[in-house]
Length: 324
Image (cartoon, rainbow, N blue to C red; front, top):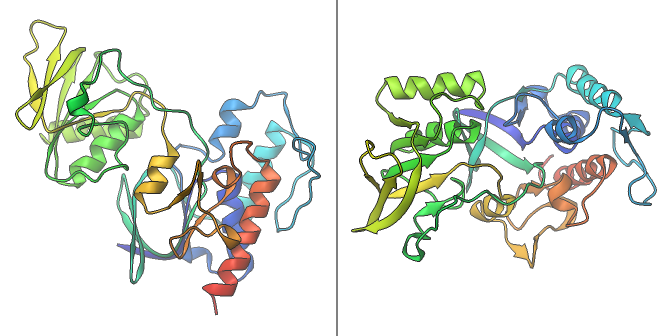
């Protein structure tokens, strides 16, 4: 298990600037790790910003004042990405792409961060993920008796040594399968198509390898008609007559969307109403665990500069409380 001084979750503007601030105060680049579930950094900017959109420094009338190392003026989308590219290169930031985080556990020695690939130990943990929409639900009704056995992520409840059916054919479905196999579960996966067209090549290769090793049972070209209670578990009924019903302890839907609140509460972060509890320097109620960027800005959201500034303020707190 690799040991780091700081693990940062999310390689957007907040996560990148957090690594820069840490390096600037003297933490070695070898002691900092950034984990990013997508194949590139700043995925939200790349996906949701039009090519010709100006990334404004002044956000919703708020004066753009930079307090930390990183700062930007009004830039194009391409210029903004290039600026963040340069920061990663110049500071030699170690970003591990296509690595999803599924668990953060606080221990007396620090944190254990579990991902789709491995686990890490770290003295400090910084969550710099964005705000996402609600998870998509299936067309059929989920019986009330099965509410605690039907899940839309693998972070809200720890599942070990159970039989689990994953529904979906995207990257999340593969990542869930990889993680749940690591947790000692008997995993199967139902997907409506013949091939995994929406899955990147790395995740596709990993899933197919697990299938060949008999660690994941694939049910391709299968469409679920309904799920019903059966003994202490679930009976899954398919629309296809040739597909026999299957039985499992839990069902996990990977149909798109995610909910950061579930993830934060799972790792122990308390909430003040609709917002996570964040104290001085963006530290949560879990000592050594920080939340920066969009998740710390509330419903109104924030700018890239506010993300940069949250990194600076978190670093001031870390220097004061956790570094000699």
